[in-house]
Image (cartoon, rainbow, N blue to C red; front, top):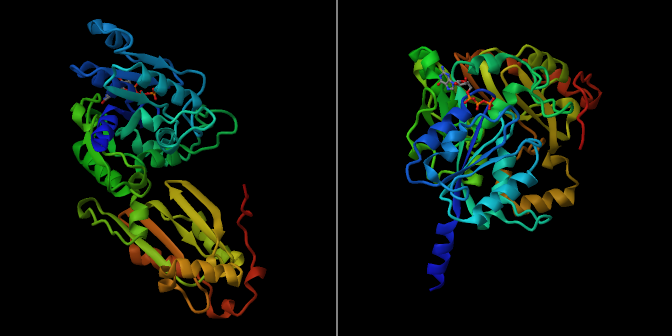
Length: 403
Ligand SMILES: Nc1nc2c(ncn2[C@@H]2O[C@H](COP(=O)(O)OP(=O)(O)OP(=O)(O)O)[C@@H](O)[C@H]2O)c(=O)[nH]1
């Protein structure tokens, strides 16, 4: 009896598809295509667009549906950007509780990060007293990629601010970082505008995207024409899984993704249990090998011996920051406690250095693995340098900003 009630409850939760994708990639085109082909489904739409609303309003009104059945909600006082959006939560709740809706499709702005949008559906907002997961469930995160602009945007080195597309003057995000976030968190990647790109280039780009996100389903489209079941009712979204689906993370966790030989796309992990010399490593960062398109991982820098550093690169954007202390730098009692609780950490524990280690995943096209490894090895402390006082080594990198 109880089980049946539970099942009914789950069935009633309205599935939600979120359309992300950089500005102009074709989100609205996909949305209009969904509305044109929705057949009997009663689809409500939430548009959160910084630019003018260009969802075909006639598609919303057409067909004699009442407003409760088909609804277009426009949210123009801001965007679903970097924080959880109170207005999004309220809108979704309003739509869901009005009933008589089969599906909700949200078009987020081209500059929104996907994780906070997804969190909107999984976290209870105590200040509002609303738990969206009681009304609806996130079904699919879709990212639309403009096949014709991808490499241009990827390599541009521009920030959203440079392009006058930033949320405000404090928004310093780089275009390429946003592209990567949207790709790495998607269940479905719609590689759109294939009519504008040669077939071979499309296949190569598809292989790159698959390497960046091995879990994602990739659909090739022109003018957003896709089968609706590829983006609606897929049941693909799972927060835990989505957070673990990035290609670099899989590689770091030893789930090597087979190479795509045809296009020379490959990946490897650079692992060493010796620290980098700060000057030589900085100079390596400044001369980043162009064939590496995405890299992320932990760095052990001799001059910051207690801090696990993180480097995250996507195209020309390289972010280097602190990620907390190595466990080996903890006070002894605390360290012992953690090691007791997580004994698997001991498997990689070095007698002298503990968990200090560089582990960097590199994904690229036509990479010369040996040459890259050699160039990184050249940055490691030499035997003589290991005898010196590491904290006295000149460190040209800026200090980490702590929140
Ligand atoms: N050639 C071609 N043009 C397309 C395709 N898909 C969309 N477009 C055009 O690309 C432009 C941008 O498409 P939109 O659907 O408005 O893109 P968007 O992602 O919603 O854009 P923003 O709302 O500004 O972020 C429009 O002029 C579309 O007609 C396609 O597959 N091929």
